[in-house]
Image 1 (cartoon, rainbow, N blue to C red):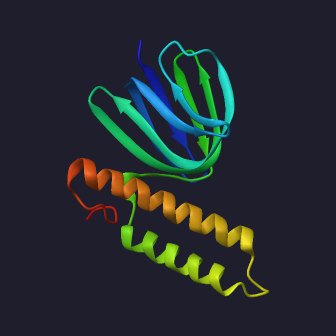
Image 2 (cartoon, rainbow, N blue to C red):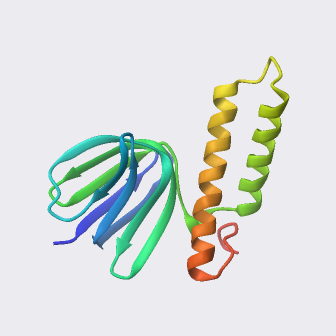
Amino acid sequence: MPLTVDIVTAERLVLSEEGVDEIVAPGIEGELTVLPMHAPLLTMIKPGVMRIKRGNDETDMAITGGFLEVRDDRVTILADAAERAEEIDVARAEEARRRAEQQLERREADVDLARVSAELQKALIRLKVAERRRRRTGTRPGPPGV
């Protein structure tokens, strides 16, 4: 029996899909794989790349943390933020990476290092997901609708 997956943020339902064979998520203690018939589980997830596999199709997502619950072949992910690879605007993510790196290099007194480090990590994750999609499909991700 395949998995049913719901990924939700405060703003929207990012994904709701049935027939999922496997989910690989960045758990706080390492990469976590959820397969059908998985034992009930509630855990935190950290920022990283999440992969959702269905047959021969694989969907990559950038996720910035949250919670993952498994119960009765249903996986619910309450994410701080989540984006599918095709939703990522590479130019915007590259600009966010560059801006965060510049702020970290300057190390000015008024710079919130934790916030800037988190912004850099988010940008790098988004770029990694976009690159994985580009390699797999041969397409360059851009803004939605392009």
